[in-house]
Amino acid sequence: MRWRTLATAALLAAVTATGLGAPTANAAAPAALVPAADRDVQFTADGTTAYGTLHVPAHRAGHHLAAALLLPGSGPTDRDGNEPPALTPGTLALIADTLGADGVMTLRFDKYFTGRTGAGAYQGDPGRLDLAAFTRQAAAAYTTLRDQPEADPHALLVVGHSEGGLQALLLARTVRPAPAGLALLAPQDERLLDLLAAQLDGQLDEAVTAGQLTEPVAQANRAGIATAIADFRAGRPTDTSALLPPLASLLNALFGPNNARFVRSDDAVSPPDAARAIRPGTRVTVTCGTADANVPCATTAPLLTALARAHATGPGLRTLDGLDHFLHPAGTPVNDRMLAPAAVAALHEFARPWKSGE
Image (cartoon, rainbow, N blue to C red; front, top):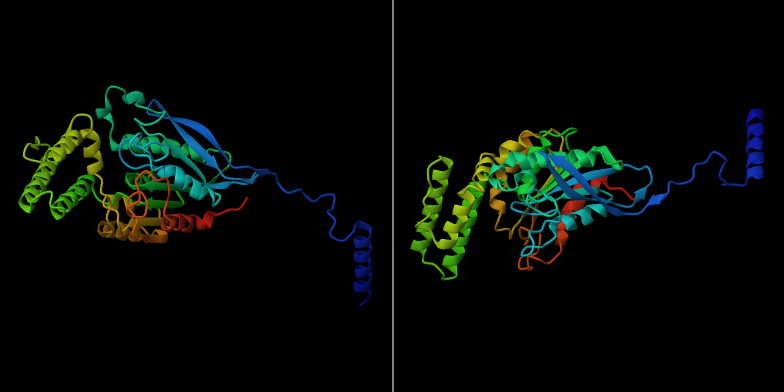
């Protein structure tokens, strides 16, 4: 057919004139590569300025990245996952590095009474802090992350370690847009005082096995712990005088004026109940380490059932053989700054839908 011959000739003439593969005048040059960088950020919640670190992986200019808020465990745990000077595993900083390798930007921050944030509005009266105050602070951090120019608002994630796992569930119910994914790493999966009782009972069992206590002494202390918790929950005075001194000191601190409000508010929350309220379709990873004495794998089932009923998707449970609460192989010194390969793999698997190159 004659028209095909003419069209072919015209095409060959154009190629001859311009050179095969040569860019046309309208071809756009590749976007410049923006190198990886950390930058300081700050935000305000309840009258207190909080400070954090935003890690932005290398990316092409103008490209929007999945963005994860990192939430720490209980106690005065700072943006890196440390309680200096004694406890410095760097858990959150290592998680930021791991996700950064997948092209996921992260924000981690100093919560109340840690790092540069300090006590803020609660100076002189820490007893006013409750769980909801920490959730509001985390929500302000989430908004700050969402509003970063590199962040993809359709790919916001929350990664919580230990108590941060519970906070991730609470946050997911309130922030907008809702997170596309949650990574719950060794999460608090029971009411706080139930978890505490299990931890202390386990320590008493270990002391009996090591010959440090007799079984009758251990049993008396188990009963005393249970009674003190029941009295605290009922609003009655607690009597710890018959407990071993380290146990009495711990419970007196938790039930004392500086911590009672927070403990009561945290203990009132059932993590499985919080999980049932997340958005259907949320991608969720839950990890448990078989050597984790803080949150044993045996307690995880109700949380997993609740997530299934909420129609969560994603990897689900990842059992990490031989790993402790800080995502270390059992026996690793707590302050070794490392994540076990199995924990790294679980994070990469969680982030896979949002992984990007440069």
